[in-house]
Amino acid sequence: MMEKNEKKENAWYNNGNKLVDLILATILLIIIFSQSFATTGGFSLTLFGSIINHNSVYLFVLIYFILLKFSFGKRYFNYLNLVLIFLYGLTTITSLITLVQAFTLNTVLEFTINFALLVYLFHTMLRGTVVWKDFKLGNSPFNELSNETSYYIVIVLSVFILIVDLISTAVLRGIIISLLDAVFLILFGRYIFLYRKYLDDKKIDVNNAGNFDEVRKAIDDTVDSAHEKVQEVLDKTDIDEKIQGVLDKTDIDEKIVEVKDMVVEEVKDTKDAAVKFVKEKTKEDKKPIKKKTTSKKVTKKGESK
Image 1 (spheres, one colour):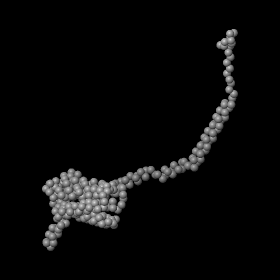
Image 2 (cartoon, one colour; image 1 turned 30 degrees about the horizontal axis):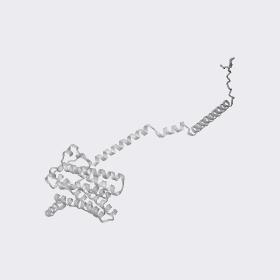
Image 3 (cartoon, one colour; image 1 turned 90 degrees about the vertical axis):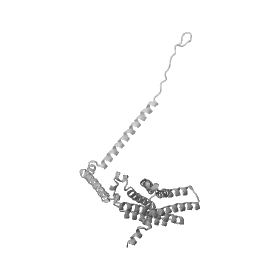
Image 4 (spheres, helix red, strand yellow; image 1 turned 135 degrees about the horizontal axis):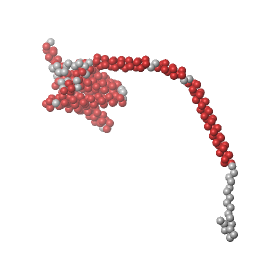
């Protein structure tokens, strides 16, 4: 029994150094295959942009794990984790924007896996740091998710993404890339799992008070309070009676007839006034115009004055 436990503890999936080596190898294979497929498939700016977007996260993660192999990375491990969390935060925001622009099963799964990894990283890599204490992250409801549950979520989502990619992909290169992506996600999730296990064994920030029950209670209280306020407004102002009273006081049909009669009378008066004005103007135009004559006095010498 003891030998089986020792073998299990020394297995590659429980050995941090071997796991990091496998992650590095997987990332290198993803980058190499992506570049080789791009070369054989013909170069274009669209294809180049797609490769850069696909490999940009892998390049940063590759640098992260390479630095962990040296004393520099081990010394500044917490700072590297902050950079890694920031990177996955940007990736999550980007996938959310993509989801809004194109709502498909693939975009939903991509956003979900990025969000799950971000939460997993955030609630694991920051434990034991000043950030965890200053921002009171121990009260986060996501701490209710156990290490095993978070890791299984990553595995299930990775498998779902792989299935969707295999269904939608008809070429060999797409199948290979999809398989390598799924392997990386599972290995990366296992890396986070081992580090959280280390923190749990060392009893580092294990007393966390946050849970989803408090969030549910807060949401329920908010909804109940809003419902009560709306009901109070409805009780104070009986809308049905007020509407009926307005309808009773103003007979709409009669008002419409009155307005119609007023409009007809106004139009008739305006017409009569216009006709009268035209007739009077015509009479004035027909009156004869008197010519003015000027008399000139003639002097004896025949000059006029």
